Image 1 (tube, rainbow, N blue to C red):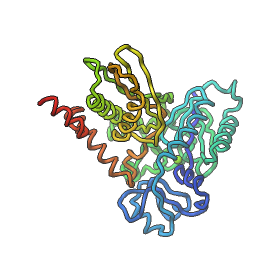
Image 2: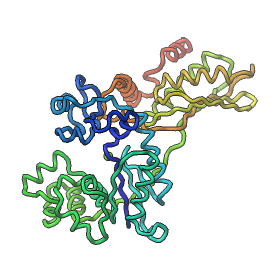
Image 3: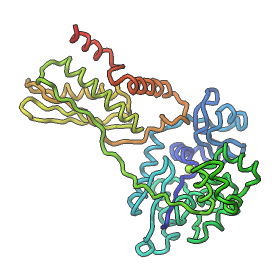
Image 4: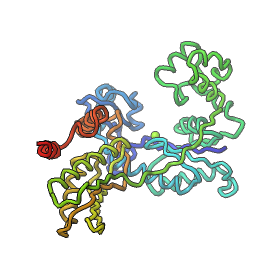
Length: 388
Ligand SMILES: [Mg+2]
């Protein structure tokens, strides 16, 4: 098995610098204003030199590096660039996985024949990605996912790396345990306290020690330290659409009834988009008349996953689409053209945070008490008048 791991270098900052080249060579911190609570989502190398790192409170980052440029994250731009990189990798490899916004795996097992030397091929892929997106990246090539990811971490300072099959343990042994993915701020000090400083120190001990201490994840820790990882590259399949439809019990001409149905559909679609962490910019309204003639109308909008925005556009489309004075049998809303919604990551404190928190609260109420627990005022009005 051969695995390529790709990680974009200081991804958010790199995108910000494409949007505004005056940020080049300056310490840049993405996350928000230092006057607000919230944490560093990404920072440039210049800022790292001052001790700033991801997930650090913005106020602390400001103390360390007051002359840094502090920026609010531009989620949609990051997601768009991430998608462009993903597309290139998916198109260039047999099996590709998008592990996060700026991190990708590709399984290139058995590709020596079509690709030639895999390391040379990976360098060419890197040139293609930077050529098309102007974003810097690092990569590691190894026999499995774990080793390739560690290799990329090393590549950040030493240049791109290929770990030869059979050389995994030797490659890992001299590296500090903190470089192992999965060894976080809790585990690292514990290992250091035990005198385990290097990955090789773990591999030299008996796996039973780690199983005793950490159970199943101790076994995984030990195997990783030995360069063993059997987890597969999970193919990246993008969902194409999210939608909802409603067929009326009786075909209807009742406009308030149809509008309140659209509101319910918008709420269902919005909730599913948020659960999948998608933003959409394309909304389609579907209308089926009593005589089964079906029409659709599609319109673009700004990226959103908020019920209100989806409903507002759906209503507009409905008023344009319903032209025949014929009863309506079915209404549907569907959305396509997705981007990852990064604003839901707990990492970000932003101006949109209030909205995001509102919808998170709405969704959790609906999960506990059902979809009808919270609705637009008009929908409630409608139900009340029906009940009366
Ligand atoms: Mg990165």
